[in-house]
Length: 318
Image 1: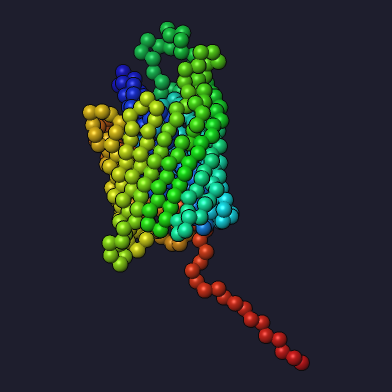
Image 2: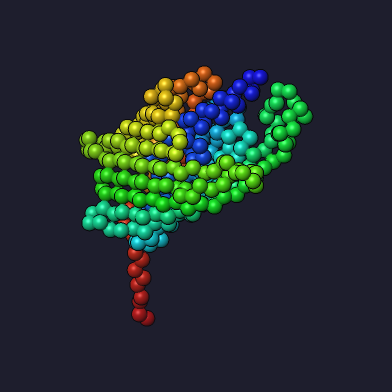
């Protein structure tokens, strides 16, 4: 009975708080391309980013996500490309997604505007043979539940705009423009992918010689679902240590602040960056779970700042 109650809570909390199908990442500041294809090629060097998120730890069937992206920033001055792969699970449902991003870069004086396009494909599966699924009266007494594994593949397109100057960035995106059919039935389909609108805004404020303040906002809106708003207040020291707190609001109507997220980041070398976050849930779901954990690892193919070594061979006459 307890397992059944937890499954019910999980399903309703997900639909109310996290706007259906799109992934949730607390470290959005270090992983913008996961939400906006306009970020593709935004940097002068190529980056590889991997994220592992365990949401609502301790809750049976809680969401888990793994994400990998390659952002080809060195490809061209006008064109940016990226490719991403993600794996997500919640309860008996799983989703594997492959997406390609393209951005056309417009130079605007000392800033630039990227116009992005994304093509993505997802494979949805629901496994009614999963041993964690419980029926109170037994599955043999409920003929409407087939003990089989369903699957469906959906192709979609999205767009995004991303503006960045030396001190400010702003982005607006819709990763899925088409309401793709994700229902496993072939007749009278009622389950479709929803359009999600993402808006982000951030700046850099110099506080002292080595300290910078990074206030950032991330707004998420889905059709027929409550909005979400993240406010990240983050500080960096010498561009090597990052520490911040993120307040997430929206979701359940009776709780304005849904969670507080502590975020830490470390730039170990020019190439290696690691980030981690822990989400403290502040709504009724907190009594069933132990918070959410997220780990991020990024490898940057930056050119070395060391001066080039030039070999000057000498030729001696006989």
